[in-house]
Length: 381
Image 1 (cartoon, rainbow, N blue to C red):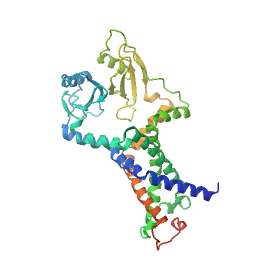
Image 2: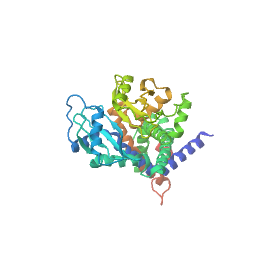
Image 3: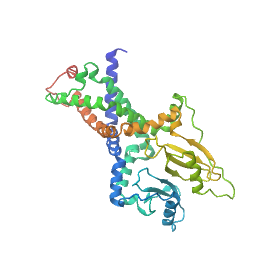
Image 4: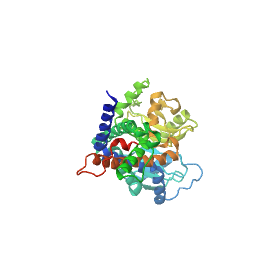
């Protein structure tokens, strides 16, 4: 294909994708900017409502904290504990998630040093607010259908970034690719803002778009990633073997077994079995793990205490390492605070690019003749 025809094709593809998904990309981008510092904002607002937790000696055993919660639900039959989060931060509450039938109840915040229940997520405005933001970001508040639409839009955002990089005029003259002539005609200024904002954020939008697409369509993308990286697909989820007349082992004994597997790790999350055949899953944070909640797991048979599987973040095969890299790439945590601040502006980019792109499209399709008739080739100089 002739280079001019190829460029025209890429240009049309870029334009029509931008017009088609512009509003969705704006929603995803703006909500993404809010979620970059979700933990810090949420923690600040949470402590303003539940008070400051002053570390005092050792934390209570997990079993004691859970017993406090079970006591609070003693008059509600059918309520079980689904999971408990133990933060690595010394001044953070333990978060217990009760469950009734198939539905999670409000999260409970418990002082890990005293066992006092400090509040629940329904009472915390920031938690309700960020829940809506999160659902809007990943599913457009439209359930499974919205989840699929957001995933497709994320992939198109990735393609949009790639086509934008190909069309960037800086490939001809590098300096001009980053220059904004503020004293030029509004048409030129608009074009310059679009090209500079686009090239500065293109790689990051492509990364967030690709990872978002992979997450929303993980049933299809995971097998592909394992195949491309020549990684053996993980076996099916570990299962417990129910023993007639035998009840599950005490959590204290199960934790001893799990901690022996990762003696130098910090307990992160315990996911309790929902069915008789489910395994007990315990998450740990190793000293070398940058993830706040840890990415290493121990799966135990809830009746025999047998270790069914161990996922050590330091010994993950290539395919799993690729999948684990998606989170820092998507949230911008790979470079610490500087890249997270950058990602706030990356989230604003779709709004800027859509507005400037729409203005460019209007200039190409005016409702009435414009006096200004500078050709496209002059815009590149």
